[in-house]
Amino acid sequence: MTPAEIAVVALVAGGTFFAIVAAVGVLRLPDLYTRTHAASKSDTLGAVLSLGAVAVAFGGDVSTLKTVFLLLFMFVTNPTAAHAIARAAYDQGIEPWTADDAGGESES
Image (cartoon, rainbow, N blue to C red; front, side, top):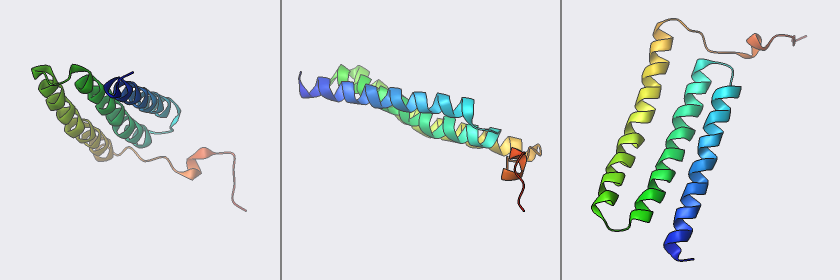
């Protein structure tokens, strides 16, 4: 295996890991704010790593430049969109989850 192939495999593995972490976070976390956080951070990193693997696999082609521009676009827009969603939820009065919402446990 060449160093470029090793880099592609490592980037794809990292991207897949963070995409799975994002999916688990969206499914398991209790409210909109924490789900948005999981999706924006982990999913952005997973997509950036995967697109980095594509850029390395393309080599020094024009497609690499296009992939890098897409990577930068996603790196900027994904967190911005997540912030806009969380801000809209806050403006609508959606309350964040707290330990008191867990139920079943009382402090004595």
